[in-house]
Image (tube, rainbow, N blue to C red; front, top):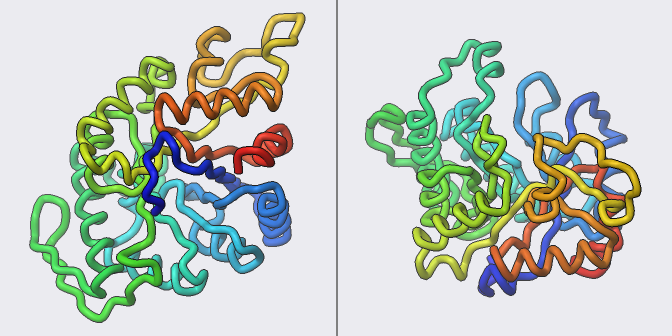
Length: 306
């Protein structure tokens, strides 16, 4: 990872692939378009009932020189040893272009449909933390030595493949609460600023101020090594020029608060550039994830900042 502080880190932009109704041709075509536009990394979400994220990303990586990242893997869908093996293989196949985003899982309906127990948040987070420790050991040393605890039974596995990137690919952990963000500040390379599920006020400017404060306090000297990520929910290029009332806002945010929340961006290309620079100075946010429908409007921004 770069050594500059978050407030001066070079911008990166990620494109989140939608695997609903995906085709190989469509994925490859979008990957080529992303690469030509200045996107740095293709990101795959991890949900059941659609194409699997790891082979989808691998297909896109084979067609381009882009980095690929999981955004994010649901820890409860895979055993740590199997996951470590898969990630090391993909890092090797892509010649060290993998980034690992991992989370504790949140979609209760997916768990129920798959017959998986949806444990309390604390239990799910504890399992994810154990997995991160095992992934670091496996990808760096080719082994896992985990003593039985509340998260997993004893796991002692040798001869696992190691990653091309040393000591392991960049690890991204995202969240909205103090426990997970403080943990990410101590253990992750990339931190995703996410809203807490079911809290409509957790996307505001004030909410992000709180989250960055938790991260900075827990990170200490590690703050300088971190990369801070945010996902864009909505763009509004006509924000300052519209004559009529705005359309209903995503996630119920007010029109006034929208321009101040880093999950949204408004104005023409010049205004968006200034806004992103201000957000990097204030919060250290330099890694912005967007959806394909945002790409055309943001190409002039990428041409300057990417």
